[in-house]
Amino acid sequence: MNTPAELVRQHLIDAEICIRCNTCEETCPVHAITHDSRNYVVNFEVCENCRACISPCPTGAIDNYRSVAKSKPYSIEEQFSWDELPPQADPGPTAPSELPEDVVRITGIATSGQGGPNLPPWSAAHPYESLHTLARPALATVSGNYRLTEDGASSAVHHIVLDFGRTAFPVLEGQSLGVIAPGLDAGGKPHHVRLYSVASPRNGERPGYNNLALTVKRVLLDREGNSVRGVCSNYLCDLKKGDQVKVVGPYGTSFLMPNHPGSSLMMICTGTGSAPMRAMTERRRRRAAFKEGGRLMLFFGARAAGELPYFGPLMKLPKDFIDINLAFSRVPDQPKRYVQDLIRERAEDVAEMLCDPECYIYLCGLKGMEAGVNEAFADVCRSREMIWDQVLDGLKRDARFHVETY
Ligand code: NAP
Image 1 (cartoon, helix red, strand yellow):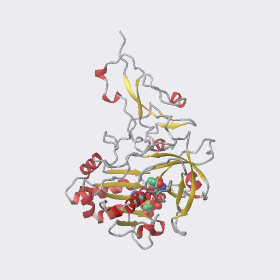
Image 2: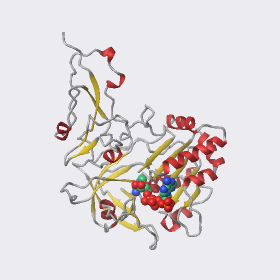
Image 3: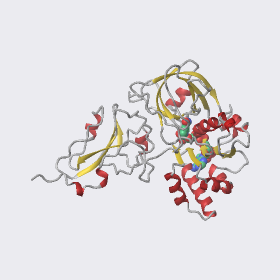
Image 4: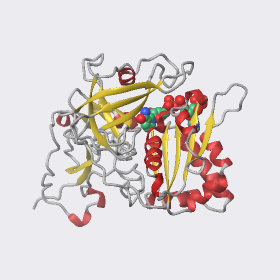
């Protein structure tokens, strides 16, 4: 009689839809993910199945598994040679009642870290995903490239408008796309795809046109302040009107806005993380005449007013349309202020919105802000005799809390 094979769940990446954006490799805390010029792969011996890489992956290529015999997982070399995932092999004789639950193959939706999928708001419009791939990218034409930050500002942030002509590239507010910079890296490999949030509403940067805008900061320093020239950001910021750009996507199925009348948005962002907030705000502004929206509350952090993308247009919005709270961190002779400080200052309104089942919360920008914002929410809850962890569980369960930080 054959002995039942001991099965385990092996984490794999779908080469067919992976756009090689490097997000998974950057995210993996134990460095289990690596790549060659063809594929991104997961080292079975190193992967701890912590799932930290799942949610950030824009395509869902990362969220794939196969049940394999523990003694014979797919090696890295095998995975490098794949064009597509292998079918689920017949594992041979098994003892099903003894299998751990997670041996079952689970499919491609990013999860919320609570065991469930990362869901969009119930009234979100249906997003299109991955219509244009690395093998067949869309070609967009630059129809505008404007500097948003003041000339004397420490960084140059650009508003870049891409026109898709007669190519379908439907997006919703909150979705992102990938840009392929031309050329090869120092190792002779194609550059990674870089992801940018769409800064325009679904009906176009110019309403009724097949165009959209990106908010791109020219990267000249790394996070430690060392000199570095960001490949894709400099490519995009240098583009001229009429230039053509290869684009993949769109991506994103959960960081989407609700559409039902009476729904409110609390938007918290830093720097260029403002891109999706601009898209959502502009969507609401264009529909303001329908009087269908609930509240809009914005917490926006930048170094100074001159560094804040869209400062001018933002300041023109009526106060009864959007409640704007700006935190500036580097204004001479002023104390450093972050978005989390303003959340604490506005505790009463924030608590009200946390408790409002029609309020959806969006957080986008620097990774570092996430912990600070969570602590501020915890303080707000504590002062109202609520427990943030419990509130957060409820927000996630109801798809009311959406985070996109890098
Ligand atoms: P930045 O100018 O470096 O920073 C913006 C503000 O955030 C500054 O006031 C900064 O203060 C503050 N800040 C720094 N650490 C913070 C913390 N722990 N908590 C709260 N605030 C903090 O920002 P950026 O370079 O534009 O970065 C934006 C981020 O958004 C990037 O990580 C980018 O990848 C991401 N993003 C971009 C897009 C896009 O489409 N372009 C989309 C989504 C997300 P200091 O004075 O202390 O630095």
